[in-house]
Length: 506
Image (tube, rainbow, N blue to C red; front, top):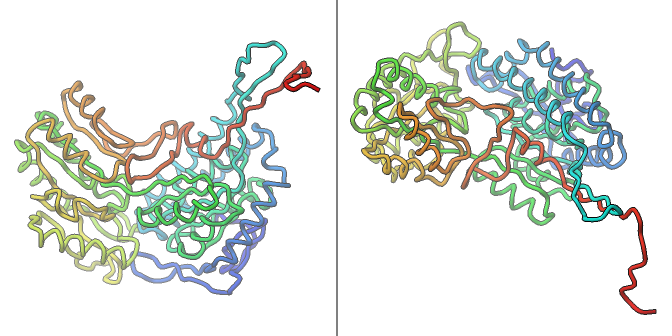
């Protein structure tokens, strides 16, 4: 397996280079969402384990070599990690599938993206100039703006893309010279544990990378408030993100929040004028809504389609959604896996029930599927669901469902399309579909969302910035801005010919 360090099965807390059990001795079973059976046991850490990990990270930053390691050496280590990820791609992809419920193919793609992130930040930091010279207007003054690591970073990641989201934080944090403590979701920690093993194998000094497995209300809360932490980066839901920001405020630490989304997918009739255009828009609407069972912060959960093509579009969408093959992510031919937990499925069911009570029309799905050999009755499966005739007052339209549920709204004019797309508290992502390039760009420019796709949905580039407007969070990941999150800026002003100032007599 990817983790080739010596470790007992329940010793999943990593501090100062050692694998440890929880101080309390508590453990947690990790369940496979496809059948609800345990397949691993991890340590259940608490505040004491968080304190131990922060102390290790603090010592490694203040006294260890990593913050002062030359940039070229830091970049080389990140590239070694990328190579190890490629080596262990199959094992890690399978583990991600069992942990989070996604298909193995999705897991493999995730590992490829993780390796890309490590390579990208290695290249980015290695190519940077050592500092920006500021003209002070005198040959006797040398003035330069330089970047330095923030310090100890607390990284709190979600359960839907465990390793990918971890890489978006770990790679820039290490590239910038920081130390860190990472807390993965307590229900999907396995690939993050494996990644810490790869960092050790790649030669990262002890104490730089630390991991605490455990729940958010104890471990996460302690990391957010800890006076020894200089930055907290959180990806997850709005409610938890608000608590992180509040906990971090008394110590005035840097905070980066990547929260939820309620993302519009706007389809103009002219995008469907040809059979190929129609098929492409329908296909991408399915991908937008149902990849990883809709458990994606950027999911296109709100279809906003022009009224003249609505009936044809929604009918075809529902027909194809019913054909999506549900099952265990490791089974051949499966296109969509289960939801991550029983609690998550119950949440989705409650949203669908409320939508039907409020007048939505069920076009497909809306229930648990019949069991099959690839789909055990004990698994947390839910059928891809299309809800038509939706409007802004419905909870299912306003709030993030985080499941395989697509709502349909309609518009008649460009102005109405923009108004509907922007009528949300969130502002993470959105898309515009049109054969009219000028119109598509015009609408995209008016959408208040951090990422806007035109005639596509879901691609992201490591070189670009990822973040949102409104309640989708603060801060940016990926791209140069992602590296900047993990740095402080210092102005070094050097007087090369100091002289007395004589401000005062005497």
